[in-house]
Length: 253
Ligand code: G
Ligand code: G
Ligand code: MN
Ligand code: NA
Image (cartoon, rainbow, N blue to C red; front, side, top):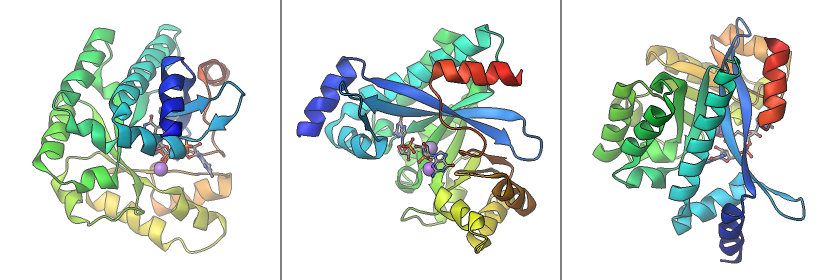
């Protein structure tokens, strides 16, 4: 409860900000997108990790406003970059299960894009398996509606949740994100079997496969050999605030 009070205050006092981590096509190195990640810096300078405060926001209902703010911020920042002549591809925004509960979620996402004049193809939503697992008609119809409008949908942290594979065929999806726990094993020169299996599963289902936690070039090469399409991680670029991201994009242009 104390954390929630502070989070509410932080939200109202603009102590939250969004950083962006580039996502590339592994074969070519071409930038295809960036993931928006929320950050909380307290007045004393300390960073609170989202793993700590997102669950609190989810339990309290603050996640609706917070998630909406992240989405708006991410779309605004993308538009600013495009107006500077910088093209980061799409922006991928994490969406919590709770946000899907609101019947107006899809409307508000589409209204935001329209108001900013951003093509829906510029936005990807990352949902976790637990969201997908709801498997409810609601989730399915929200995703279908957004995809019909041109958005893409990624399953985040794939392979770590309490998931059944059944929803993979039911839900309209575009991308599987291999959790970095499986990618880390490639780095240790260890078993590649789970990462390989997820990649093949993605191929079978006609989905893009994006690996998280690509920390060096050796891992990138191993993922490429497995047939994984895209990646993000410290070995490519760290999550960056707007100005460093702008500089990073300018240096590549
Ligand atoms: O950036 P970091 O690795 O610390 O993120 C930790 C977790 O927090 C990740 O699983 C990520 O999906 C989640 N997260 C980051 N930003 C957001 C956000 O804006 N909304 C939601 N729902 N989750 C987020
Ligand atoms: O949404 P998701 O749970 O995937 O959040 C991504 C998180 O992973 C971010 O908080 C980001 O800071 C972190 N991250 C990104 N790249 C790497 C990496 O290469 N290694 C590790 N250990 N963490 C990473
Ligand atoms: Mn994510
Ligand atoms: Na993840």
